[in-house]
Image (cartoon, rainbow, N blue to C red; front, side, top):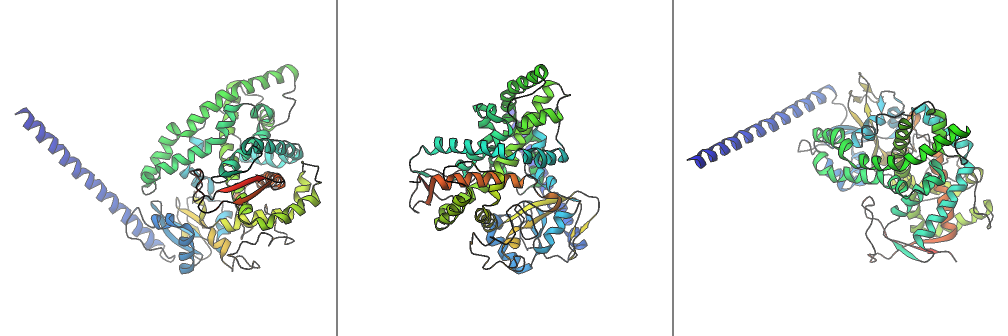
Length: 507
């Protein structure tokens, strides 16, 4: 009798749960449909890509081939349209209208970025947070004033990484991203923390991998979060900050940084000078943290290294890997780059100053063209953080809380936007030589580093790092694509369809 009652109660609970779940789902769909209808009624002038299933929308079609998706609907609707992506309807903006998004004070890139990876929530709260003005002064004053000293260190570390990774004999790499990541981490590490940071294997490992592993966490969670904004909010607001890779890496970085910070503070207090070797860590401590206790200083420096893993290592590594892959794919252009390099830098001189970097105009053009030809998706998302609608010049309305994606395919490949650029679908690496269009200069038809107040303030430093590393690699090594049937190794998870590359010492 007891078992019969138990089974009845279980069935009753299951039925109740099913009804409740169905009701919640139905209510969610109803609210979603009403919200969509309300929004469309208020703003029905901008075309929206048709879709069948709520929440899924056009996401699967976009992810299947981002370039084909961008081209198809740009050709169909023009520079502005709406699309249901990642659980919500967003406005996709290209062409001349992209500049309006970048320059509007209510459109926030940071707010959108936090919807993807909420780094700030995982950082230690008991720390000094550098303001945007602090960062700009660091980059535009400190780094620029010391750039030649830092570039000399970057060159030295680049050679060290290449010798340790390639071992002075031909190797076949399953994609170039891991090598680019190691080169970037060491290059920026010597600038941020000097020789003491580079000698700390634990700190360097986590500095190199924090951003990558966090991004992989996001990729693994995507099947559960990308269609459901509520689950996405739960993940980025609670799960990711408390249990994600960032928190784990931050704890290890803090333990690795603490002895060095304490040593520098002790030296400062005893000798009134912080360290014999200048680096960004010294600058931050001297400029912003002198009146803070040791714990705050340690937390602040640890937070800085985590943030730089994203802002410097992750972004520059991807850009560098793309440039190196195009050098392997188009080896016919390398001789011209070497000739230019030999005219600027003597054969027996490894070092290169920032002034000499500016003379490498063919390499600069090569880099800019790689950025253009490889950026074919939607990016640079911005959220309207204001309380009023943002109305673009064509009448498109972006409501408070709504998001805008920049159609980078349209910006980079539409002939009406790329005026004066012949054959936009063809890789022509020297097309910008003598055109006064350096890779660091942002414009409405070149958005690699953003635009206006959202432009990356450290872009010139990133380009200097890339130029330095590329110059050393082409001087000492030859790159070529491996045969298509070569299955050596496994590409990095962040390198989709990476081609295998043969790297051999230059004779």
